[in-house]
Image (tube, rainbow, N blue to C red; front, side, top):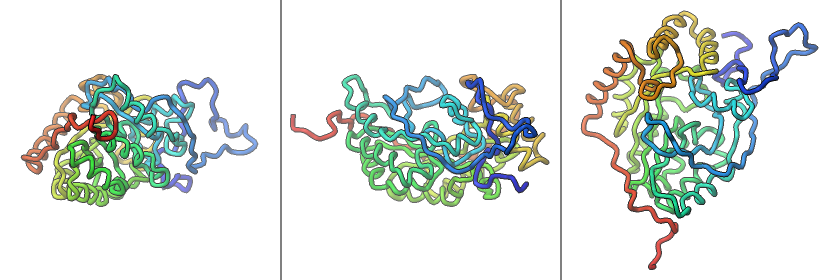
Length: 350
């Protein structure tokens, strides 16, 4: 690893923002009096949006709504599809995404306003559909916990996906929701190889911590499963059986899967990361990712983008299905109970 490698960060570059006409660059460093530095220090930016619950129009996703208390994510996962959304804020999808975090302080208030709206009908909301609601900042800011408290008060269903064991902090609220069949949790585990994990997802919890998180949640009566995503051929696809078995051994009730796709700026970020860290595997991994998406590493076609197509995609899907059938046979998440929703937020005699 070169001495200028930014440890603790996934991206090592600041990609160009497609929406900006003028940008800082170090392409002609001989013309600068002093070199521009890419500081890895995390900065917070506070936003006060008008709404927090967003309609999901993708037929690939099971949830009709999602909400995210943070934009950007300190976890620094190199493959993250959410990186491109940072460009809408004038930032880079690369290092900026994991070091310049936008915080939505009023998220809990906005959620409550949504739930009491007379037009709102209860429907499961995905918490953390874009960036991780339990990223490191949540330990200090507690916005996700406040949102869960609102959901519990109104008895509204929620699905959560995270890579962080911090979710166990909120077991008291999650148990309340689970008692009324109002919560599903998916813990995302990409690899059991800690060397690969530390490079690919530098600020996430270790795989063993995530497995223990599943175990802790299930023991508390909170439905939890494992999301093996993204599957990257040539890097982690061979781990599918061991990942699902390990999750099942720790009580997982279900498993999900997505293959990697490298849309827009993510392709350049991932390419740079792969060349720096695994140069001997670059051609194999890059070509196999391309084979999933008709010869390109990017894919936006509904029905194909998250599962891929072709021989390698078929092998991955077959491996996933057989592993799930072998280790999770007879297990499933309990259905949500939408009848428990109370718009008033409190029980009443009238």
